[in-house]
Amino acid sequence: MMQDIFGQTTTLTAGPALESWNQTQLAFLSHGAATPGHLGDTLSAAPDFALGQAVKGMFYVLLGRKELLQTASDALASARQAAQATPVTGREAHFIEALARWLEGNPRRALTHFEAILAVDPADVLAMKLDHATRFILGDAKGMRQMIETVKPAYGIDHAGRGYLMGCHAFALEETGDYSRAQSMGREGMLITPNDAWGLHAVAHVYDMTADAAGGIAWLTGRENAWAHCNNFRYHVWWHKALMHLDLGQYDVVFDLYDAEIRAEKTDDYRDIANATSLLMRLELDGHDVRDRWEELAEISAARTTDGCLIFADLHYLLALIGGQRDTEIHTLLGRLHSDAQANTTGLHAAMADPGVAAATGLEAFGEADFVKAFTHLARARQHFHHAGGSHAQRDIFERLTIDSGIRAGYLDQAEVILLDRTHRRNGHEDGYAAARRNLIEKGRAAAGLSLSMRAQ
Figure 1 (cartoon, rainbow, N blue to C red):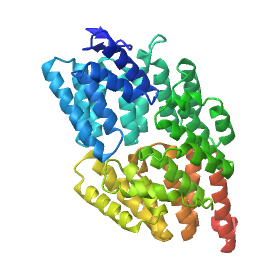
Figure 2 (figure 1 turned 180 degrees about the vertical axis):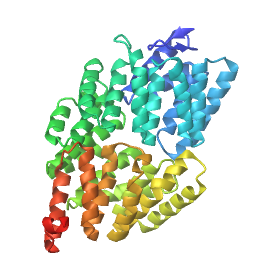
Figure 3 (figure 1 turned 180 degrees about the horizontal axis):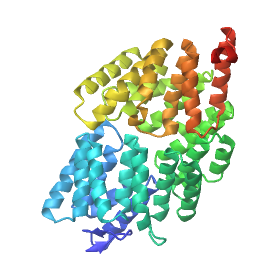
Figure 4 (figure 1 turned 90 degrees about the vertical axis):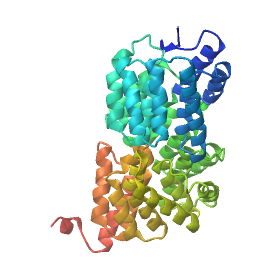
């Protein structure tokens, strides 16, 4: 049997299929736009390559779109058929079964198969990256870090995936609050693999969580080649840059980045919708008119009300529908969320139930200016919001909406507690949003005739 570029045994023989498979893996690790093309070339040359079919299915599942689940199911069927025709390794069988568990709506069970692969060979970079991606979607930051730190000793200086592993480690460190190590790890990893946009963006997260927007802009500026080659992930890196300018009050730059980069292409990928809706909502919370930018997002999201693939996606579709004032579609999405929560037949449904329903109810109430109801439900959802997946930076829009709801409802003490907790998670670093809301709370107390000393009594 042959080995791939990472030293893994493969059923492929030397030639175009193996070359394309190596390129597929390298592109996937760097979030390259060329990934599907390389995988297509692999499967054209070797249609009975079971692992390639399983990975194709995983790629489609991770896109979080209901209409693509059939394509993923077809890939699973092709993988199983190929495995019956040609014996596969235990490793390949685990990839196939991981896809099956994902398609059942139980990504946590898929993790057991990635873990089994890594238990045999911790240097399996493909299993590591798919495990990392799955835990990210599940909001399992601690598990992400534990997995990376368990396998990391197997990545010697000659391992072709070492830099990408370090990028994943940097992100896991940041999401678990170890900001100094995250920054050094991400920077070191990029010296090895300069095209690792994930590692670059992990360092950008550190700047966000340490309220150093100017430092973050300096980090990203001049490194555009590190994400220019990416798939839609490049829009997400531009989104990070826009957040930094937003924190500095450079709103014209934010709008320019939104139009020229973040929504340069009007895609319907849920991650792109998340970038756009969360940025527009931040702008509106800061008092800026986003004009008609909600309309195209609401039009796309109106077609997604029955998807039910990921609660993270649903909540951002809901933001778009609220921004576009699509009442009918808002009610349709909320009704479907309640149905999924009550069914609770899969691991993904569990997130619909908690924090999904409470969060969605709070968002709807915010859109209707019922800030008491909005705060009550968003504060309840906040306790388990990490189950919605995504990063601290991505979930921060819901944190901001919770705090703003509390302030507008007159729940100044409660809003302050959440604001202080938000700052505490940033190791005491206060960003522009926190400073502005702290001032609002102080003004609210002054208007009510309360001094800080009176409140302390």
